Length: 185
Image (cartoon, rainbow, N blue to C red; front, side, top):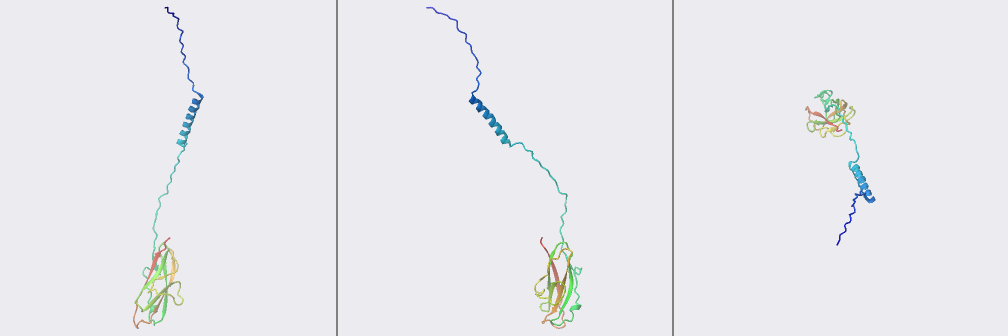
């Protein structure tokens, strides 16, 4: 037996460069584009945040005041001369000025403390003319008309009459109190 030797054919190896298929290129391109879109949308774009501050200069807050005086005096004493020697049914009037020396507007009421039944005291806003109708300020505080602004004055008429139950040669002292209540803004 004979063996034949034949020279071997040279083996050539070629390294081929594997090119991606069209389908692979499309998938890769889609993935890159998708990543870019996701990156931009997740970041929301690039925005600058602006901020500025300014302050108000220091200020002073102060409260108002409320005070009333009668005829420019804190404790005015009415003249009793006009009310002496009264007879039952007599009516005598005196005018006073009530002033708000404060800065806050107020409503004003008048009330009287007097011996029960001896005298009747009535009060009203405005000048004295005629007999004042309505309840006695001895029984019920009397609201004076309107609002008294800070620094403003009002004229008030005070009428005193001797009741039918008064006794002879007797005096009946009374106190008239004006009360100011702040008007709520």
